[in-house]
Length: 201
Image (cartoon, rainbow, N blue to C red; front, side):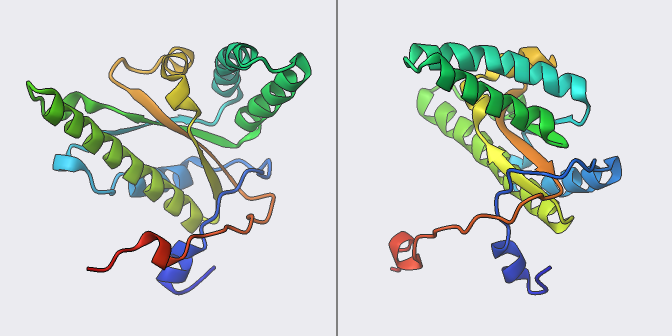
């Protein structure tokens, strides 16, 4: 484990394959508590977490998402063999991950404006706040020696995710994290140079 904080932050990488070892509730509680220390617009803390560790809810989620995924792939004109392959891979990622966390946004406590411009900005602030909690969650998992990967499937199927997990009406699924003890070495990441992404003025 890197001892320098900058080295630690830079060492986080996406992990997609996990050991079968379960992650205990105490560890997950620490991770979530750290995630909730992220900054948020107006300090409204619009993040919500659905934590799946048991086979039944993970299986139910994979079945609901699989049905919608199949329809999307079929409408794209993919051959049946390719559809089956993608569905199998998608289901195994959800079912085999020791922990699945659905990161949601609850914008019910954000400011309300009568005009579209400010309403849109407020929505964006809520999304940015939730994303900050997502990054904090991944770094907290990394601090526990766990691997994780951030996926965006719920953005394409929010109603399906809510139905599968019976989530509160105000919770809007934004992302899905797979978490567990790594069973692979992280892939080398190609990064843009600072000159490509920075403008000094």
